[in-house]
Length: 329
Image 1 (cartoon, helix red, strand yellow):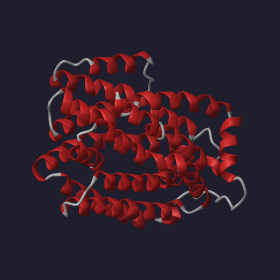
Image 2 (cartoon, rainbow, N blue to C red; image 1 turned 90 degrees about the vertical axis):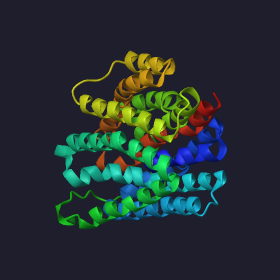
Image 3 (cartoon, helix red, strand yellow; image 1 turned 120 degrees about the vertical axis):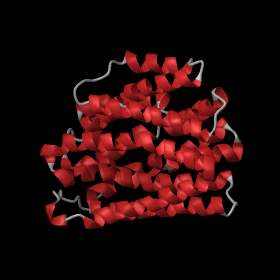
Image 4 (tube, rainbow, N blue to C red; image 1 turned 135 degrees about the vertical axis):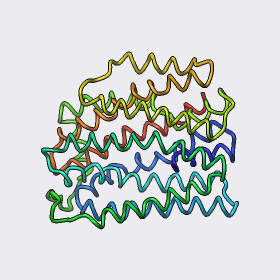
């Protein structure tokens, strides 16, 4: 829910699309700066223990945002700092969490586990924007940050409850020179990885800045409020869930996401946009899912964390350029 409250807080403080883009930039910039090192950390240390630390850090940063809001001292630069701190945590957590899937289920069930993980994640997109929009409309953004921050304690509890003896641990990579460069060279030497990374970069750069343009569409195009934004993100999430379930059996044609995106752009009313958004979510979500599903099995176990981190750089760090550009446009 904090992913809804954060941009809305920036909008309340600035009423600026450019500031929304800058907030997205600060949130994604750490992936570019330290993302590759996050993958190296995933390859070298206990992934379960690392996640306990990262989830605790998420909790602390989001609760700090709550404190800034309820004490009425929040300024936009403070939100930028908090977004940057969340980005640093995410730079470590993402490759660790993705690599941990294999340790939980083993290689035989990896694809099914990743599909289930993605389905669960996209399924929450249906509920969380509605709840966040309703809470923001009634209580403001403060309670949303409070609930969001405390929710990470449940994740920490789940990690602590895991039976470590039933995991499938992989051999840890010892300390050495040039290990990040080794990951880059591995991607370049592996044809499947070298082919897909640039294609993903182009798509993510120009097409995946929803966090920037969704609030602007809700307020400026459809003259709505936080509840409007919540409903739009929820319907997008509904489509994303459908796309995540369908991606196992078939791939979407490249022309479909383009045509649906154009239909959303020219939607004359909010009800029409609601209908189109579900199809837009279904059309767009298969691309990052299939990319992640292809890259992990194609990577050697001892370097998987670094490959996932480079994918995260491509996936998330299109935003530092694409986010402000989308906000300006």
